Amino acid sequence: MKIDRLIGILSILLQKEIVTAPELAEHFEVSRRTIIRDIDALSNAGIPIRTLQGSGGGISIMSGYRMDRTLLTSRDMQMILAGLRSLDSVSGSGYYGQLMEKIQAGSSELISGRDSILIDLSSWYKTSLAPKISTIQDAIENRHILDFYYYAPSGESKRSIEPYYVVFKWTNWYVYGWCRKRKDYRLFKLNRMDKVRESAKSFTVRKAPVPGLSSELAFPRNIILKALFEPDMKWRLVEEFGPECYKVQADGRLLLIKDYKDLENLTMWLLTFGDRVEVLEPAEVREKLKTMAESMVKMYGGKKNGKH
Image 1 (spheres, one colour):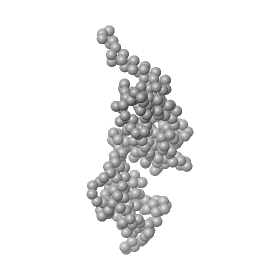
Image 2: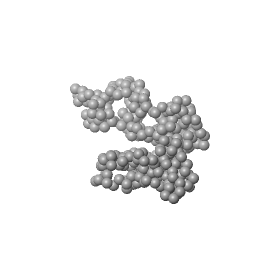
Image 3: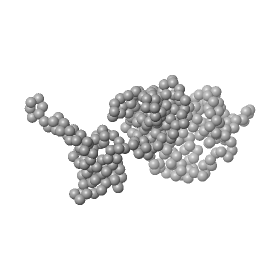
Image 4: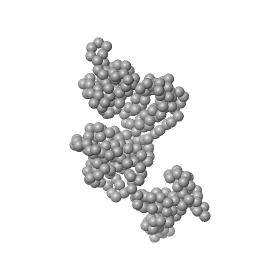
């Protein structure tokens, strides 16, 4: 992808005093003309690049722009490398690992000991996630409409959006863009998307706001859950909501009061606790769980084919 190549060129220019266009073309396996266009793109982005013609000439970044790496501590470099490694966990190209090696090779004096931070962003869907992210990044860069099928609790639908951001939040990946069906900005979870395709249709870039990433802004909530959990479920409540999320009751059970948006998702989540939770409110959820429990008893413990 072009953006990867631009980052790579910038990384090389930050490490070397001067480099030639043929050297960059050979390194990135593209034509010299492509490198010249990339250098123009970097210049237009505000990077102070200088080109010198003739013998001993080449491409360089103006003096004073480079960051003195001696200002970086070993911990700084470990953080940078951990960030690059985490991006590579969802990259289908291995690009970030290559970039990490370039930085590491020129900064060995700043890196000591073993890696202390390991981040894997890929989840269980790495094989399907990386191609989606790559396609979305291409569509954002090329300003092309993104088409896909979306599976939501309300049903399936075909969507076309103007993509602006790839977002990682709440252990999931999302794409944020202008939905042509809803006529508004929306977050779409990548794991619910299928047949993701960058179309040939271009769009005029809007002044898209940076997505509000607080859970309240992204997922407005209007359902109040009140439920009592058995004490042995404390670990799950702490894991999902923190150690201050519940109040211990006189009988030892744990009272949880939380806001939710989606009734269906809430019900399915409560089912994962089996008989270790009693829902107090809302009544609709109590009734839904009761109906589902009766249906399961009939399926697993009732009569079948006239026999017990």
